[in-house]
Figure 1 (tube, protein in one colour):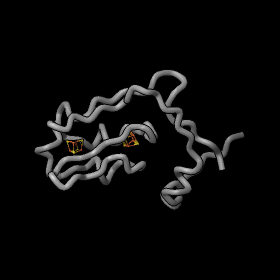
Figure 2 (cartoon, helix red, strand yellow):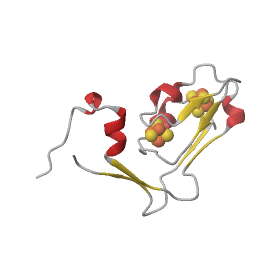
Figure 3 (cartoon, protein in one colour):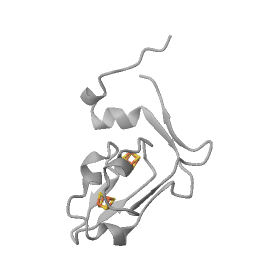
Figure 4 (cartoon, protein in one colour):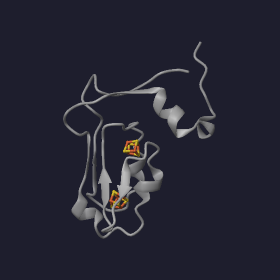
Length: 101
Ligand code: SF4
Ligand code: SF4
């Protein structure tokens, strides 16, 4: 029987990443519209993404890299700017694979 973990918050970022495998598709499953982001002063995605894939830039925008995405959907939920994030799951056989520790 599989034991479900309830203590993810205590796992370090490095440990979280080391137990994950990413089968990267050449086409991004999440696309962030830099123009839509330019007027966003709160940038919720930066603090909400557990994989730290949104990085603020000095000109007030964000850089985004889809490759190590956990597919949790948090960025899409917290973003209040319509059209800023286009979110899909990766194509079959691609994306994250979680390994038990
Ligand atoms: S993705 Fe959404 S929350 Fe993040 S900077 Fe762009 S508009 Fe703001
Ligand atoms: S789906 Fe989750 S891990 Fe992927 S970019 Fe959005 S918040 Fe980050």
